[in-house]
Length: 279
Image 1 (cartoon, rainbow, N blue to C red):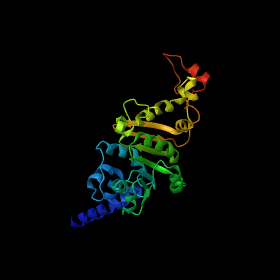
Image 2 (image 1 turned 90 degrees about the horizontal axis):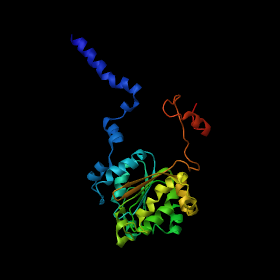
Image 3 (image 1 turned 180 degrees about the horizontal axis):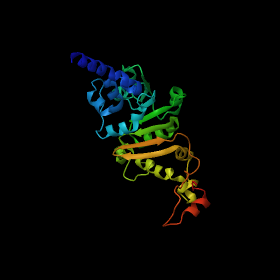
Image 4 (image 1 turned 135 degrees about the vertical axis):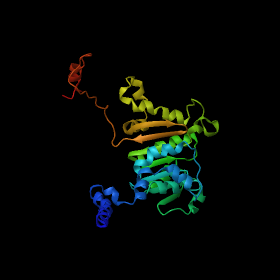
């Protein structure tokens, strides 16, 4: 009987090794699997004890939704508005293997002692000459605008940096409640408001469905670039998130029909004539 139990124990000990042949993820330590699957920027934020960072609590879920797929992907990340550098440190823990860049107008940020994968620059983010000087050959997977929150700066920054966002990248603008404040160049429905600027993106997203000719006539070169690359735009409390397409769109999306019977509404012949019937 003792020999029998020893035999069972021996086979049980070998089971994880045998399973790992078919399931390679089991070769990793359990805590490593958890880190990769359940990592949350909220948890990292609340455990952070280095340089200070403050955020509105609704931002954490937005960060996870937008940034999670970039974890471990050697991403380039730009934060506009560094302050004390705390959020760059948090991002460094969250986006492992990322290279982070921070820009701030305050020259004191150059004295920050941060991790080796964080690079700090001191210049006005709307200065095109400085952008070319420092970021001429750099594109970003993630851009976070947490800068001055002045409407004109937000709009100008987006126009300058959307082209420097990599295909498939995400551009996140924070603290857009200032778009309703006169102190920051905003107001409710005001023409100079940053929120009003981004509301127009709903029209740009649907460019190919707008039949009024004056709409296309009034588009700027910036508008044309944006609608070709715009995948989606999300509005949250105080935040706007823009996702960039993997490649520019130069035609409407294709329409397609599947199925072989139309017992209620006869639509198959129409689909055949217009070329969107699969069969």
